[in-house]
Image (cartoon, rainbow, N blue to C red; front, side, top):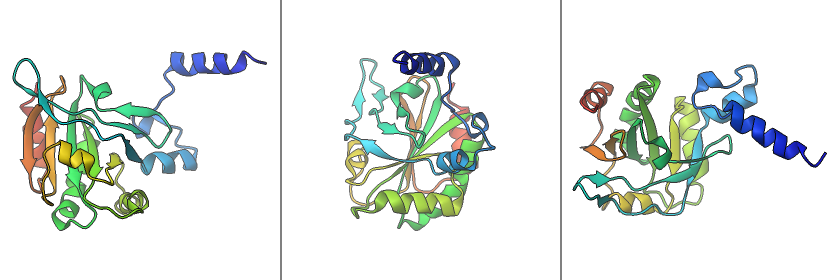
Length: 194
């Protein structure tokens, strides 16, 4: 009996049971689908400031969050993938206009999209971000940044949102995009990243 947790952990790790896309989960279980669909998480810690590495390129600040299935994730764990990191706010009208395009980019499966909900100091940010994602059927990962620490660490001042970072496979910032963008603009940027 005392070996059951160890055996289950081994099976879990060996079989790779952690879903990384909606198609990998049991779509017959509506609770799991809903849980994954509402993939809103809170930022762990503050992240660090963006810094140049020894080549002079800007390396992104790591972000750590726990996804809606309870698995700890990080920006560093996405090395080897192209990532679109988008800073947005619930009250932001241009952010609203960009959301469908962000979801369309995420749907291509060529780019991992992470939305950072920030610039909002109300205590209910997590719940409001979840409701926002539900009502717009947004499935890409969103991380709440209730104290705007991450926003500041990535160079945000004032209230300028939306803005995005195109991150290459090595974890470096390939391009910063200021203002609302379209799917075509995002994909054009990522098509230039090897």
